[in-house]
Length: 384
Image (tube, rainbow, N blue to C red; front, side, top):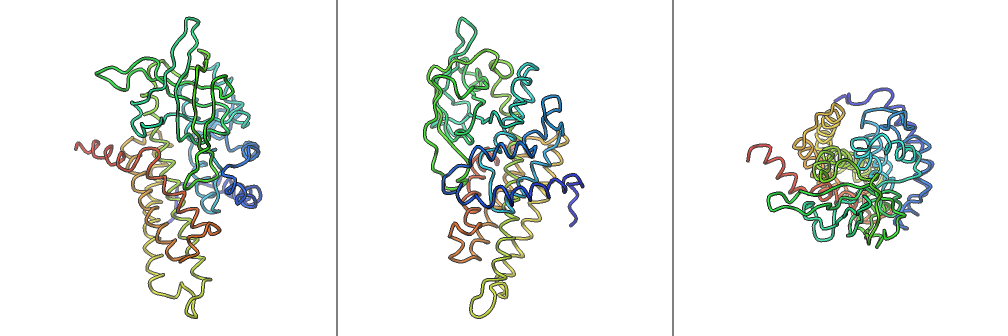
């Protein structure tokens, strides 16, 4: 089936991005994988290519293109090459929507030029130890002082991009929850990570996504200027929910791209790998397995593309985003596992990209809301 989601400009961008990945990422990715983090210089090079400013309005140094299709191509091209861009996806997919939606004109003038140039990398800090998907259970507090500033105390965990970040959008309680509404009293702040009392704990040792810097954060009497409050005080939970659809689309599209890459890796491997005097591809089981995987990937592509179009049209609903995430991540789980099986023992070796894909893919059914949470959202939308 002919794919219609991209135009000529998108395919030109794909060629440029593919060349960038081949020259600036692939030769060094094994080093970054071993180190568990990409160098900060990578983000500077990505900024020079314009990757951080595509959806930023022109008056702040961006390209002003209101579309996620260029981000989708980044998911596809990094998966195709078996690499990642570290934690930079959080910078664009998660943090940017909050700035565009909530920042005042003064804040945009202050934040966005540095955002585009990678002079300030951003992350998002919601999850706390022991709360997981229960965001309403957060205990971090930001208490207003007599001078109008806020004093932040608490801790966050699983914060992707947390080591390199210069600014982190932190969700904290500015007033206690009520008996009627546990979500009450949460606010968002653009916290400067160089503030006194702000500290980075462990860089977490993860199963997958080894090149992205995921950290624990702690705040001890961190003073936040009033001008770094994002949006209205107390409406943080509402804001967080507003942007979950785009986050879940991103996970869905990334999972589809990983599944497509897995089929490609397995296809190439079984053609050249010889067993019992013939290529692995010659066996009927191999053909049937790859054919079944290809059919699932085609279906995931259709779902991801439909969600992408809806997102660009600003009408992707929370339930639709949850459905896309659930379907694409479950497809990727099955496909990547079967493609690894076709590699035999070599599929378990990190020198083969299918092994990294297998580990990287597993978190897709956890972050951005677990598969169980996705099913709950879909069932509620069905009236169940």
